[in-house]
Image 1 (cartoon, helix red, strand yellow):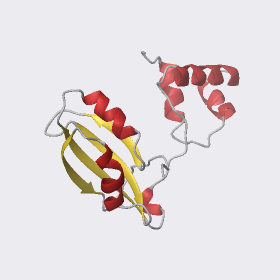
Image 2 (tube, helix red, strand yellow):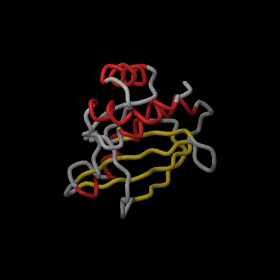
Image 3 (tube, one colour):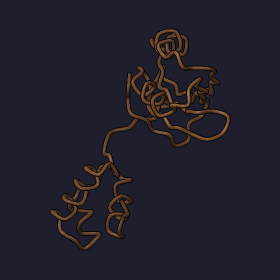
Length: 147
């Protein structure tokens, strides 16, 4: 979907998640109903999702890791879909380079890296290798609370 100028401005205004539709409408010079219908269309088309996200650095006992995954299959999207179903997984992307997937995982004191690998990753037979990157300082990565 190609975004027109109004849709791009709508998305930019939504960076402030608590901004009301009326305030956005006034800023853009359109009606609140137009804002509502355009947002509904963007959501329906899979362009925009509105949801609450957390910064794991700000929640005691939580951490974020990024895992590079090499799969033993050329069916990368199938592998990505399997990872997307695992507990703690906040996002999965299929990439080029030395990994096939990059998986972002939210962990806490009760469900840590050991549990993620032993209880979750072990369910996926196609994993050839992994490399884990522990995020020690999160500047602006917010994720859904998936635990």
